[in-house]
Image (cartoon, rainbow, N blue to C red; front, side, top):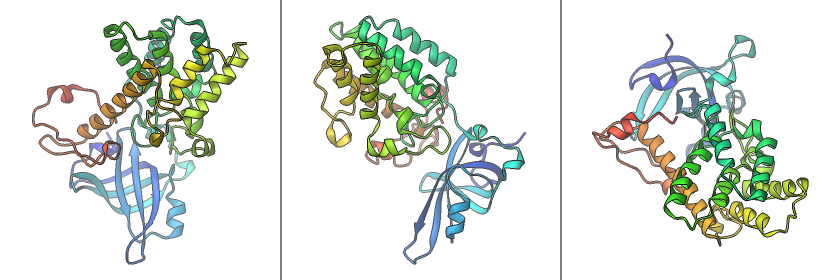
Amino acid sequence: MFKKLLEYNDGEEMNIVVMLKESVLKTSKNGKHYLILNFTDSSGEIRGIYWDATPQDAQNFSAGSIVELNGKREEYQDRPQIKIFSLRTVGENEGYDLSQFVKTAPVKQKDLEEEINKRVFEILNPTWNRIVRYLLKKWHDKFFIYPAGKINHHAVKNGLAFHTVSMLRDAEGICNTYPQVDRSLLYAGCIVHDMGKVIELSGVVATKYTTEGNLIGHLVLIDEQIVLAAKELNINPHSEDVMLLRHMVLSHHGLPEYGAAKRPALLEAELLHKIDDLDATVYAITNALQHTKPGHFTEFIASQDNRRFYRPLKDDALDQSEKLE
């Protein structure tokens, strides 16, 4: 049986067909060009450097390309990487399907759909319930397949729905502890807060930001979708219920410097921001730890202020957890 990308050990040579998740052309201090490549298959991803690259190489080995990689896995600064011996593009007629190189969330799409639909029934406010149902139906195919991000967290197939379900579970615990929290509003906010990413991102394979994503961003995009949904459903878009839901999505990044249009001004909006940040943080650190040897520190995690985290020699909870990527 053929090995997958992350099944190779340090020092092992590989000859494997993988996809390029990312390809960036850089110039060294001596003026030579090189490519920073992120190789990926369904087991995960590893970086490699393609030295002495030409502009033609950058075009041939672009993001989304399937390539045959001959190289060796090694470790550099506590981070796995591939020493590249040779690289060639794989033709369309060679029988490879892009989907086989895409990492998927550790929960089945069917189970994600069932759990989110269950929470919708617990949104008792009729305005929020109708808008949430309308948007879930409108964006169903993309919402349950798209990643939640390009790089930082839940950047896998079904990642957006997986992130949403994790947040809803956290929200349930908070609502059970603090009865003053409006469960309907918090659940509605969890479900739609990142739904604008189905417009902001290009899809599952070689994910990029779309023109709308770069110019507008998912907070404003989903705010617009809420207003359009209200109009389609003959709900007054200026009603307080609609304004509260809009505030939830527009403020969920917390601070303007992190992309929030407004700072949270509702208890539920503050909680949504903190739950969102909590889930993204747990995911990013857990993913890094799962790719780190016991007794070592993770690589620097950009989303966590470039900090490194230690993986204890004995950590049963982490060992028994399902691999994220």
